[in-house]
Length: 184
Image 1: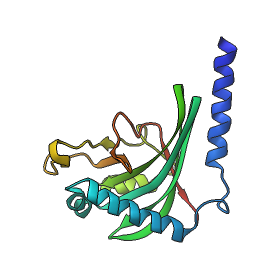
Image 2: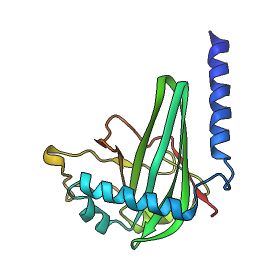
Image 3: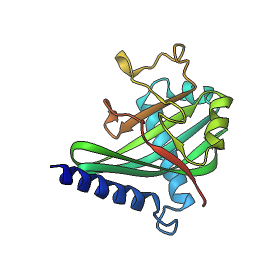
């Protein structure tokens, strides 16, 4: 049994490394990422009633339009996105995460991370590879009755939303995701 666990961990590590080292030639182009980011923000604004208000309060928004997650015992996820500041793309990032535990299947989700303070954005940008839960916390926002978020009670420096084309997704987390700036 122990050898199965060690084998699973080694497979997971190999999978995670291979995801993180995907050559930029295989990565989406700037135009592709920008188009997907724009579409994701449109979906976000139509899904979250106060999404536009939150976006207006944010110093910057990091958008991952498609984060692919797959697993069979061990799992991994990968996505590419863009940082928006003042409505303009300023940089491109990738996110990668790995997990161990019972899991089977695949899914695609979108992630929107809002930096609500200049200090949180500065700390994020200063890192060589920012890891959620280690280098900073992302408060996962859930919606209340009627699909609204009380924007007056949000005091966290970094907030995040995870959703699919069916709406917000629950019981998910940003913890353990490593976000790295991509050279495009």
